[in-house]
Length: 172
Image (cartoon, rainbow, N blue to C red; front, side, top):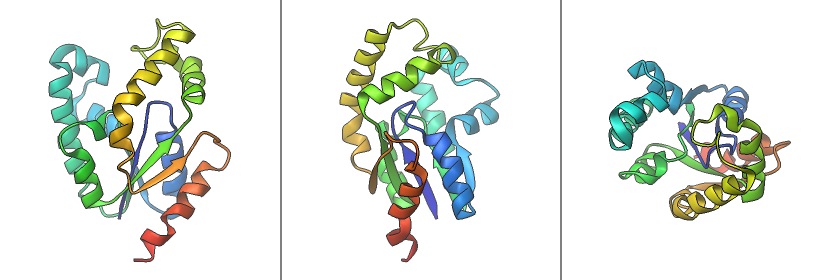
């Protein structure tokens, strides 16, 4: 079984993904890290040198390779579900879980780590909030197609809630 975690940057895909994989005895894969390792370049370098279109092709290739694994929890890049037929592909090959987080909580989380995110580092708090809002308007129609939607705004028990939401799928 493959479990794909989708959602906006800062939703907790990597943090919760590691916890879920540990709880379920599965492998954890971060799709962005997979791309970095495979192509020996950072995501930012890939964007700068090759552009977004080429990055999205690399991302799809990585998705197909990762999906060959038997039991894995995959933290996807925030934009991955929004390109090509990636949502259909993930739903065909596993269970897709959208980690939904309130816009204000996302903006707070991202503001705290924006120094490590080149696309965010120069944004004011208000610009960051507007950016999150605008991007969610574009991406949520894709995210909302997930098999399961979990409110991950409260980080204290999100991993347990995700594991509980998987029970019906694991009994099949």
